[in-house]
Image (tube, rainbow, N blue to C red; front, top):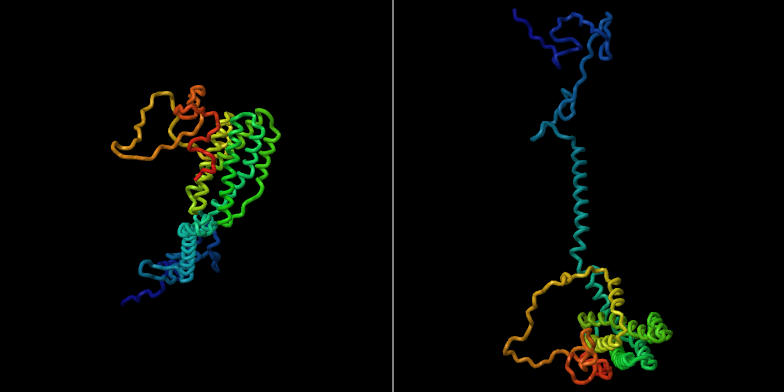
Length: 366
């Protein structure tokens, strides 16, 4: 007679704490000690608690539903996927915004306020003689201010005249700045630039220092205060002459260049200029490290190849005349000092004639 198949459910091999192979009615042997997972039976014996469902893949209980996808056996719930997508999108947007903030100034650099070109354009006005920049206007004001205190300083030098060299320097100051003042007032009137009528407080202080000084102290103050002032404006003249787009300002720079160089030469001819102090003050004001060839070590150096016109080339211009100064190796008594060895019989220290090419009275400046 065939035996009927066992149709009892199987789940993990146990049902109600009994093994499927245990005959019905048989008692389960008690454990050594009852634990929290055991349940007491009516007869005082303990039956084993059915095991709790252990988590399976994806965190679902064993026997629970499993979500299957094309790549994995299970997938995260839809809410988790949306949250992950939103978080990733937010990160990408933040990165893109950061890159944009960094790149945008580079794209618009030429047009940004604060750049050199923007500042130049913002401070420039158009005239029929060409654009007039802030540097051009400042240059005209500086020329006017120089005359307001240097012409009185020159008059004082001629009146006190402790030496002939001081008197000659004063003469050049008066003639030169009278000419430059006439020019700058005419140009400023055409360009609509307002000029001051008094020197600055600093310039007034320099005049007071010379008024109070006596003897050699006066000579040194006269020579060094004026030499320092001319040296500073000399650099401005070169910058303006190089940069200006205005024809009137360019002409003014040409005239000022000749006159100021003449004044520098005459002040140095007094023999009172302290070049060490001038160099030290400029070094203190300059934070850029000096550059150039290494200092000489006393050894032999190669002779440089001369730069000369090629043979047969017909040139007609003459080289610039050397300034009328006395170099350390010149002999003042040979009659050629200050004339670059030309020996025309006029001593360089006489001061009766302006320095060739560096001065001639500024009224003759082009």
